Image 1 (cartoon, helix red, strand yellow):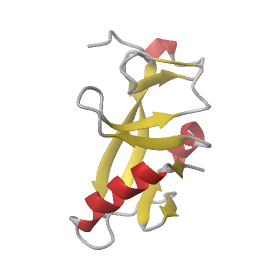
Image 2: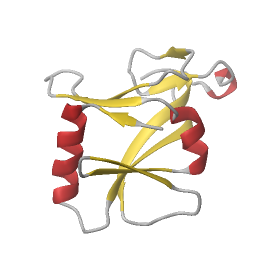
Image 3: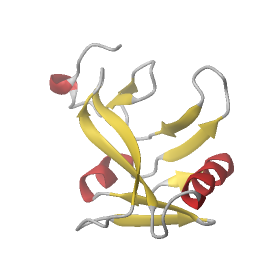
Length: 117
């Protein structure tokens, strides 16, 4: 479902080491953003019905059922760059993405798009 680069795996493990046991990095997709859909991430220790768990070398991820449709085959990476650093998602399901890198369009999301800030 979701793949992590080695750099992203290292950074997820660092985040989880500082969190409560049982915590995972939740990656999700929600309507909005300048292209129609936007990515989100949060640390979460609560399991929801339909959640899918992915584990890469001790880096635990969780994706809800709806987001899994949009994230199938996506790759999560991490960059230490001073400008634009942090986690990024390369998503083969995105027909186009915004320059901000946090929003994408599957070809059917134009109705929920808003201005990029």
